[in-house]
Image (cartoon, rainbow, N blue to C red; front, side, top):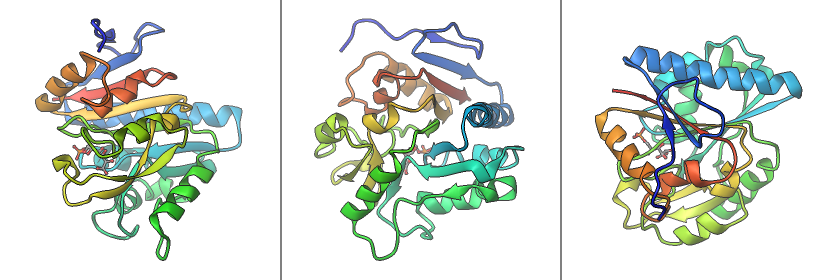
Length: 249
Ligand SMILES: O=C(O)[C@H](O)[C@@H](O)[C@H](O)[C@H](O)COP(=O)(O)O
């Protein structure tokens, strides 16, 4: 654990070099639009320099409104590849799958033109699904949108999860995980998750959180660097782009 907290700057015009930049909004509406504009600007910047941009999205309850707002952005969506940060071991049309959430929120309106890669497919075993995800992950990732659970998990990396060390240390972008015994995983114990190695190449990293509980948790998460205590720490301890945290009460 480090003694020093990473510097946090509570405004969007943060100084260069800070590993964590906190964007604070007064209302949910401002948060939704602020986060959506940040994601769409990052994608537009990426598309200025190359033919395709790649966006990785988390599930959970928090980001839906942001994905709906983002789906209205006037982007060159047919040149954007959308994939998932993590997935429960469910078929993509399952109401509890992250694929379904992204399909119903982002892949609508302008966003309907994006190319979407699910992490699961009918008839495919979990190791095969992970191998395919790792093959897709060879394409450069531009933007990663993370969430954080109340136990300090991010993606599907849960505190005290079996084989968390392997997931944290692997050079693979995705791994299959077994979250047995992790209350934060709910009833979805088998999952596929992005790893720090998968996060590392992204040019833009965002963490979307809301509410006082998550803000207090964020303070604890930022007050150290041990990912075994709070796996969400990989969001700012993994070398690479700074982490933009978008928060509102
Ligand atoms: O599929 C998942 O479970 C997510 O990708 C997960 O990592 C999510 O981001 C957090 O659990 C936060 O979820 P909430 O927004 O619901 O708190």
